[in-house]
Image 1 (tube, helix red, strand yellow):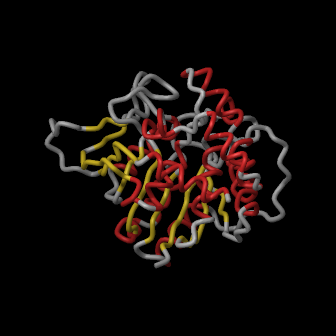
Image 2: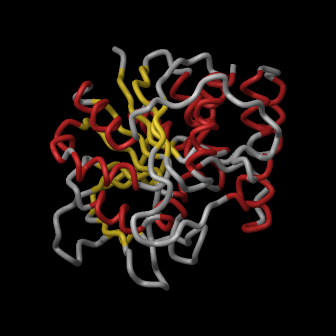
Length: 309
C-alpha cells in the first residue's frame, strides 16, 4: 500500500540523503516538499531540495517557506554543511524553480488533500507552526508526525543542552510540541555511534558507483569534517536519514521507544531549544510525544544503501 508523505526540510547534506530515501522508496508517494531556513538560508534550502528531487528523477512540487525563526535571529549551520549546504561541491542549479504557494499554505493544502499522511520534519519547525496557526484543523488530519530534533537527557550538538533544529527556532518547536500533533521524536543521539557509517561502510557505499552513492558521500564531506572536529568521530553520522528511516519503516527500524511528556525550552539563554523529556513522569502531565530511543542500525544502513542504488 502506498504511503503519502509531506516533508518539511532545511535542505542541506543529511536532509538531501533523507529526501532521496523517501523519493526512491517504492511504496512512498511524496506529495509535497516544503523548505525552511535552518542549515542554510531558505533560498539555498529550496535550491537544494529541487536539485535532490531532480537527481532522484522525481517531479515533486517544492514550496519555499520561512526565511527565519519566529522570534530569535537566524544563525545558519553553514559552518557545518558548507556555504551551499551540500559540502561546497559545485553542484549545478536545478532546472526548475519552486511553486508560487508559500510553504505553510502548501503544508495545509497537502495535509487536507491527504488525510492520514505522514508529516516528516527535518529542520526547524517554523513552517509547521505557521501552518497550524493558519489551519488548526490539520492537527487531526496528520497520521504521524516524525520530527528529527531534540535529545533525550543527552548532550546537544549546537549548545551543551540543545540539538540544532529545535535550537534554531525554539518558539516554533515549543508550540508544535504542544499542538496535539501525533509526534514521534527521532532525537539526535540515535544517529551516533554504530548508526554512523564507518570507513569500510563508506567505501562500500562509494563502490556502488551510482550518482546517488557519490552524492550521499560527497555532499556530506564538509559535515563529516565538522563532526570530526566537534566530537572526534570518524563516522558519517546522518541525523535526518535516521529520522526518515523511522518514518518509512517504523516497525522494522524502531527497536526502542516510549511515550513521554516533552516540552521545549524557548526563553532561557542557557538552555534555549532544549527538549525536556519527562522520563519519570514527575510532572504528571500526559504524554504528548513518542520518543524513539533505539533503532536497528543494520536495517537503517540497508535502507540507505538501497536508496543509493
